[in-house]
Image (tube, rainbow, N blue to C red; front, top):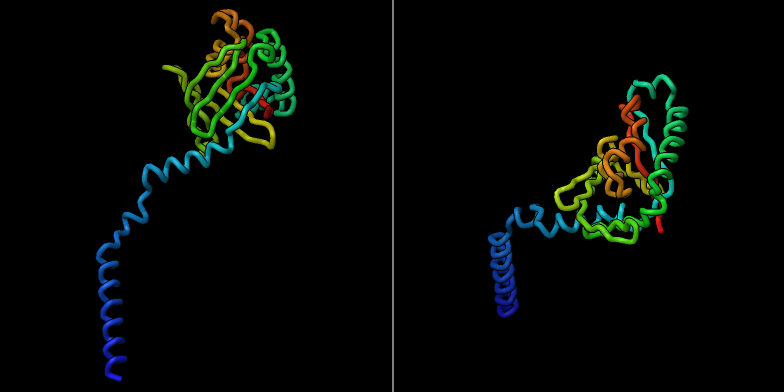
Length: 198
């Protein structure tokens, strides 16, 4: 009986010491603080939404505000703008020149234009619904929407022109002429590309 009582006391004392040690080493910061590794994992998970290899499908238009678009009515304005964009994109040979855009989960991108690869890094923000493509000192931001097997990239007109110069390989004047209608009446609009998954 004495042996059993002694054994129970010894076990109780051991458990108490172990509990004391675990309390002493418990640091809430180590559990609740996000580490760089945690943030990197979050970024990789978020990037899965846009990751993939995409190719140009057709123009994409998002009407907003109360300018000419509001007076025309959004469906009519979107249809009219899509038609004009399609003509401009054909003139700039977007479908022919821009073979693909690959967005990798690790935050890198590769755009194949006229058989040549241009590489850079991107950052995707799911909360803002935006993506920023970085290439050397050039940085271009766009609204991004994933819809099944389609990815829509929508730009302010000035940012689109920057990207178009890169894709089309044309001089600034040629690109501006081809897309002049964008800056004439359509200020409250975002335009860009609908891409389909390869």
